[in-house]
Amino acid sequence: MRRLLVALTLLAATLCSAPALPQARNQLGPLCTTDTTPADKMIDACNKIIALKVFRGEQLATIHFWRAVGWNKKGDYSRVITDATEAIRLQPSQAAYNLRGSAYYDKGDYEIAISDFDDALKLGPPSGTIFHNRGNAWRGKHDYAKAIADYDMAIKADPKSAFSFQNRGISKQALGDLDGALADINQAIRLDPSLPQPLINRTAIWRAKGDLDRAIADGSEAIRLAKDKPPVNIMTPPNSVLISGYTHRALAYEAQGDYARARDDYNATLAIVASDAGSKANQATAKVRLSLVTDAGAPVPRDAPSPTAQPATAPAPQQTGAAPAPAPASAARGVRMALIIGNGAYAHVKALPNPANDARAVARSLRDIGFTVSEGIDLDRAAMQKMTRDFLREAARAQVAVVYYAGHGVQVDGRNYLIPVDVALKPGANMTEAMIDMDTIMAGLDDQVRTNILIFDACRNNPMAQQVASAGTNRGIEGASGLAAPTSLGSGATLGAGTLIAFATAPGQVALDGEGANSPFSAALSRHIGTPGLEVQQMLTRVRAEVVSSTKSKQVPWSNSSLLGEV
Image (cartoon, rainbow, N blue to C red; front, top):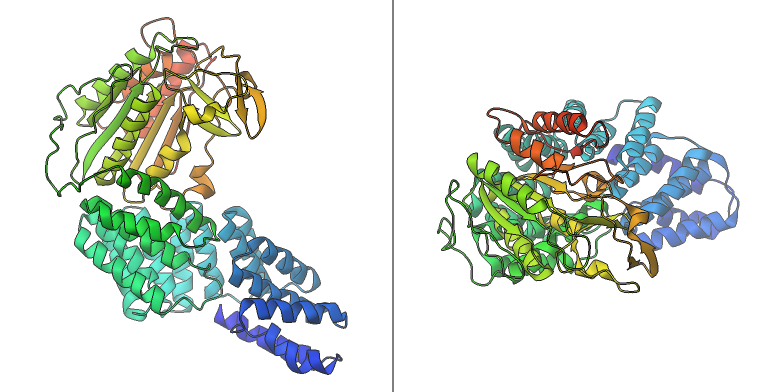
């Protein structure tokens, strides 16, 4: 970004030579157009210059650009976009397109960001900075091959770009190349040992390798550097580095079983003001993880077996009714864990005959292929919430986590909820509080060092006609049938990029409970899930084909994946 700012300093000089009031020429101009000016003073000076109405064209574009820089320092990306757009209208420039693209990136609008970076590169000359920023946007879309190609161009243009080595390493890590990632991150640290960001990324690599002591050491040093030397790059969102540092160190402490220090770091994460999409997603994860470790009690020593641990091939205890569900087994790194819940014996809405059978069949299939399974049947809200929270807490030590739910599910205001057997839907009551929020489960699993597979046979055709109060308005369940497509696989998720979500049918549609002992979807799933050597997305393709055939095209299973390789 520095080369672009140097070019615009020349434009700032032309501003000061333009006919204007002496005050604007001698005082306001430098305050507005100097990147070291504090944000509020920069914005105020630019506002006053614009109010003079003496500048036009390229000079006015320069003022709008610098005011956008001020808004960027404050993390107000909507205003960055407004001012950068006006600058582009008045005089298109690489710098304005780059700044607007970076603001869209920070808002999580990666497609628009890529378009702006494309336009910036068309204006030329080739810029390593813009290749780097476009690489970030490709990485946001989980297109890591294109991201690496852009980082290669950025490094070719500037072999001493620590950030380009760092982000290329992040992309390699996402593709499972931990050694290649470590080499790039180490090079970034050699190029600039004062940067906290590469240390944060190395924290995640050490966690993925199971070296938690090194992960914590790197996280601690990153936090120290972020406090002692806050980032001066205007393209870095405020507080984002410190938020990321606390979050990653907390995850390492949690995986180590040091819940007290994990709680401290999660609290520190939540105490910081977040502005960009990545930081807000980090805080969403921290909020869920904090609640889990707060309930955890005494730390569990690493590699210590849980007294309730079940061998992968042994039947796990089932939970019925309101009985409390036991915590799943503590898992060593590399263990595959599954949470299986089947709710059908509803007390106040239409009962479903098959979810209990479906859950048992899927649980049996997963145990057969080596998963440690926590299984719950016909759970009320208290038992369902406890079982879910116990699983999310223990999943911090897993390499692969599977969540399967069969039963009633509903979407309200675009959010998905899983329904315990004791829920009573009554008009005028805020019934979402009596359900289990799917977004909370997803946030609790948001972690780039684990593969997450979430499967929901939860859009059964249910006749619940009662009203659910949401956002102050009563609306019928049937007005929002089926489940909503989750948004958190896009801009919402930030740490995790290895997640697959599968629904028994398409979003907004209802699935069949089936006339036999199992639903069409779960019957097919339990048959194919244990096929030796079959990659999970190929497995779901076979499930989809079987369901479409058996239901005569009445039901088409749906999935969305950000998996980074074959599972």
